[in-house]
Image 1 (cartoon, rainbow, N blue to C red):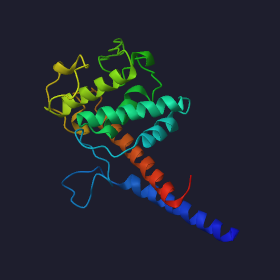
Image 2: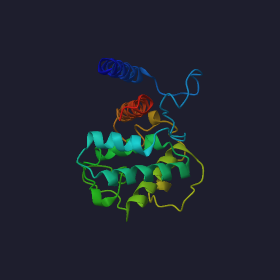
Image 3: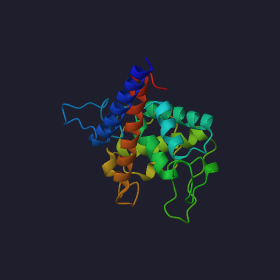
Image 4: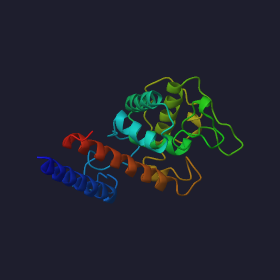
Length: 216
């Protein structure tokens, strides 16, 4: 019996590894690829339903920064989902952009944790401290509103908290590939976001597989 269980575990592990490799080979979701759907492929459209859960976000963030408080990470992940869904913004893109802008909440740049500024708003160079928000939810909301300003011309669902909202030409960046030269000067900005989306997709795939196989 033990031998059979061992064989099953090894087979499950092999399947898990192969699926992980396959996940990295997937391309971003596009409405023009008719055989694909956003539930199987991550979306690069900012105004699009996100697929990841708070558990997926927490797993990604804690993997790259294990020193963080777990309850704080879980609360932040839920806030990103709630605020994104209220504005119709892709929660996956918003969260991984936060990870990129803050270095997975290590804050090695000019912005500090107490500013509750998760998107580098106002920090146009290393000498600029950027915007400061009174609490986490307001900071996340400002990030989401800033993304919506770039990606859409639709009205906001909440009172405006992003003080830089009106500086943006609305709807000029519907996808992550439109952000370089607009949101950030970094020419590799979109590729960095795409890489993080791919990693998030892998975490989500692995999590679903573990549940299916009963591996916790």
